[in-house]
Length: 622
Image (tube, rainbow, N blue to C red):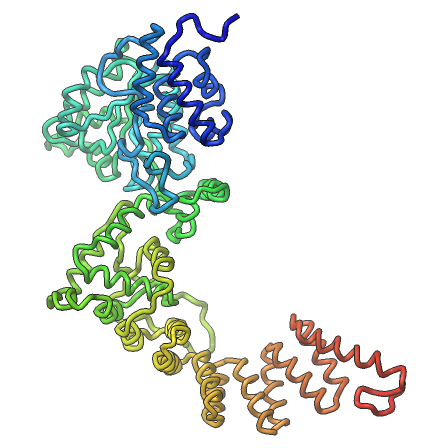
């Protein structure tokens, strides 16, 4: 027997050689190449040997992309090989081309993510791993029925960027392996292209009606297109075919609603076509879908991993992925420099610890120093209004770079104590898009906000947590005056932590009296750590009794550091038994330093007991 086929093909040999050499250069075995290309191992093995015959268009396309080879050149070799071996199929009538020759983004699948995670082989944008949901079962059944010879139509209905188009793309992949074609009518307009060529659609074709409102909702051609699609589906001579479409809910409602008595009926044929053939796509991932996405992320899917870290809106994963590229473009290429300044002020606020809801007055006053002198001179009286309007424009998934929001009111059980709940900020508040927040945390990490940011924070922010976080950030960036003013502002709004930090600063500056006053204010606001600070101050001043009283108060409030300090005080006063009891209590509450105190004491005792001495050198009985 001979290894070569009966009909030798130089083009096929060249095709096999180029594929196999590229595989070897990439260091891949056939199993690994199958995984990278999404093909079966048997399919890859046949493509790399002359005995396997001429590989399909889809196989050559996938292998070329996986190996970063020029697709067009290899497809030309494949065509020549098919002609030389006499295996070239007869021309398939009708519009479209093999599914394997389409890129998903050519079919309007939204690009996902940015940066290295979104970069695929050959410069083609990568897709995140796919998570199957309920509607995928309906699509899979329709594709299987079409493969077995029964024409069908499914129109997915869902809001923007919920994964409708991607679901259709995944559904047709089994048909690609069977040599099906795909036709996406769009030139010169979608409606004109569909009406012109629907009569030419041949068997084993997917008709791709993404954003079906452009076809079925067209005022001039919509009803005729619906009639032509219906005729295609029932024509056995032209089947099997599979028609896939997507719609937003508002369009589906308009097309399927019954007309009012006596009124017009502009969508009668469309309504008949869609009856029983629509399937809903949910806005969010349910628990099972989130678990599947998490598993894909854990296995190395960087795009899904990034989306999951940003998902604060109840599983809006696909919207996040679809909106990211446009959000980044809107930040990097704004129409107005002031819009970028507002975004950067918001990014800095979030990364330095300000809460989700950013007051408009704060952002507006923070923005000017983010502008160059030239851009600042171009500001008009209504610059802020225009910039906020620009940033409110939504991208895919109905997310805006900076959107106005309404905080939910806190709802806590009633208590007999005085209500100390912070009042919500006055005036409008805004929320930064999750992706831009994440982007800012990475790209702006080494940057210190300008003076207008700190001034606006001191002027407009009132929540103690926000002020304390910014004070810490200012201190770490050597903006010490702003750190002091922000902490004082937080203290004015009742922050115990701010009083405590100010007390430490006063003590460090040698103002013992001022430090004690501030520490007492912190203690009055419930800061038990301030009691320990006061105890240390009293002990340093020689007031041992006052120090113990304060430390016991802190210990009574559950402060284990206070127990440790009391143990040390008792030890110093010669009350070894009381010291050991307090140290044990501290250790029982998780204070590991107290364990060391106990261990040191036991070590001393073990050395002195043989000599009949206590730790202080006095006689002791065993």
